[in-house]
Length: 314
Length: 249
Image (cartoon, chains in turn green, purple):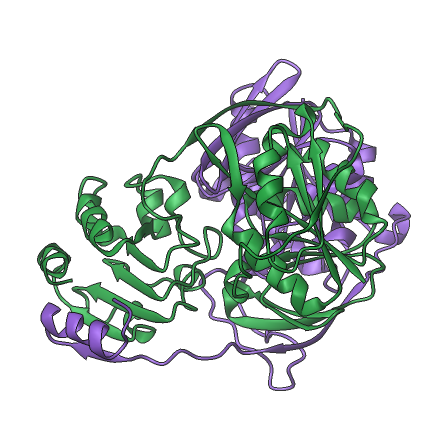
């Protein structure tokens, strides 16, 4: 059994500098399945990513497809590359990131197999658990596909070490340029804070923040704690903060050591994105808010008084 | 141009679902069913394209039981012109649905297909991408903005670190994210008019599509319940607990 893991990477100032944390969780899921683990790095100017991938503990080979056609990971071009490589593998895994979710179903369809999305545990090499209905039920599913195509929910698996491995690096793949799509531009969030899905502490704000400007209270608390800042769907829909901050069923799934929910009522779809956090704190002035039903520590208070005080005391 | 919109009948988003005692699935008896919220956004986007004079015809399609006609009628009331029900009583995998939709794409030859990015029951987030692969079309997933631009469509996508815009050759597949638009409600006169709009029913067999799958569900369980903790009286007490009891700061 050999497993192919599709790497996500970190891009800073338009340079691809390393492997995304979610790839380490995905390799961990591959280790649970068992067998040799290869990592595919597809993109352009990804030498540093390949070098980082070769150091991941447990990876035996890194395949690098460095070609302009794979810039921005356009699925029309990357999926045929993965399909071409997939025949040698028992499983193809990717993290359930925007990229993994975009590319992998295209691969599965081209291979004529069903995909299993967002697994949170590996029961055996062909059996997996995954949440359905916004995490209100957990399904155990078994795949009989010759090549099992799977996305991995990062929070379900503790990451493997980023260092310690010494995989061989091999260039692969002809360029597939389907010529059907092109990259136009991007507006990326700039932040010096930790990445939301990888942070050990997350401070999130909801509708109770009242406006985007008030999020400054959360940013300064977060900076003192070394935390990332997230938001509920209500806060994003209201335009307080951009979409990349949304935590929830259809936004980002987080499971930090500490999650501080500020002015968030706790809709089912928000809870789906954070209820696996180790410790949950809720600050809300409505003592009936559903968020208190999942919080380890609840504080019924006006957030505009409590948050600055919290910042002082931590 | 012709726009095809695929929709799904799912449990209403306000319903708190329960797992069946025999762990065979989720109990959907006597539960309110609705159009999947992301599919409502897909219908709305198509209607707006028609109102702008970009779309000439909107065809709405679903794969589901006979009762899914309700969701097709809703889409017709919102502004779709005609509907197709691919009748299949059992739940299918995303690949099965994508194969059925591909047969409809072949027949209808739409320039644009709009789907929700995921359904709130199976949470798969696969069908649009799979339909794009099977049709050989480009895909713009998780869309927050869709602009037809000659023979291309520009799609702005919600990605992990912000927004990305891609240009896709038409025909193309778009899947909707939450911020694409705010769906309207159907007016009573339009609900009445929708009853007279054409609705065709076909079967997977008639489309010549096999929906056999490579995955089976062994069991469905309730998740581990997280119990409520304690209420603290002050910020000072909270900080003390986080430092000394939970030891997370």
